[in-house]
Length: 61
Image (cartoon, rainbow, N blue to C red; front, side, top):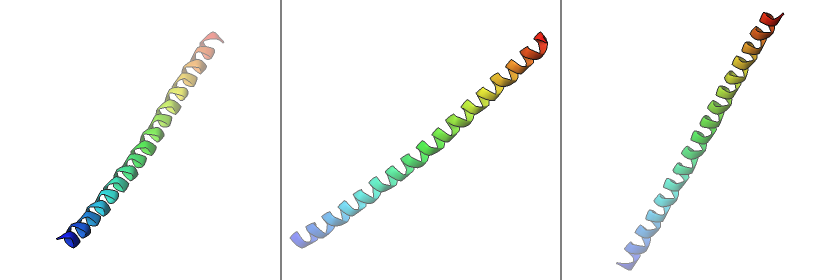
């Protein structure tokens, strides 16, 4: 009985560690994806503002 409990406890611990590792990896991937997406949006906003600034300069000239 005790041997069975110890073996299953370690299997459960192993499963728990594997699940934590999966959660960490998925979190990192999602973080990288959202950060990359954020920088792409910022870049597009910057380009749009630059385009508007150039249009205003053309109108003034």
